[in-house]
Length: 161
Ligand code: DQA
Image (cartoon, rainbow, N blue to C red; front, side, top):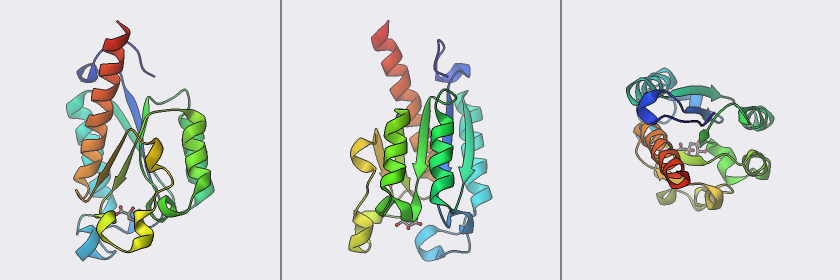
């Protein structure tokens, strides 16, 4: 949970949530999603957390309800969420409602450039409530999202002082 200490002092904890088919990275449409697999994504998150002095845990599921459960479970445990709901981005009111229910700052991440693909991928049920939206940076987007959340929380804490 958020408390005293900066990004570099190991105080923040973030949950990185990935939706359906993100476990197929590396195999799945490499021209769109790149050749790095899900393990590389997790390794990048862990490396970013180590370097930044915070904690980041990864969760992936192909099931909407499991993602809702993970978001609910973040309440009182994590300071923020990085989420790539994958295809559920474009369909899921349940994921939006869960994110609003827990009220944690979250960043929406997409590996591909969703706004330059099919029209249906331009729709995001969660974007309006996201603290930031990162698209088309490959798995590097997760690192950027974590660092963004760190800065955001540090700013909020500074404002309270
Ligand atoms: C995605 C984009 C979605 O449209 C797609 O359904 C995904 C991955 C991305 O990371 O680029 O599964 O969220």
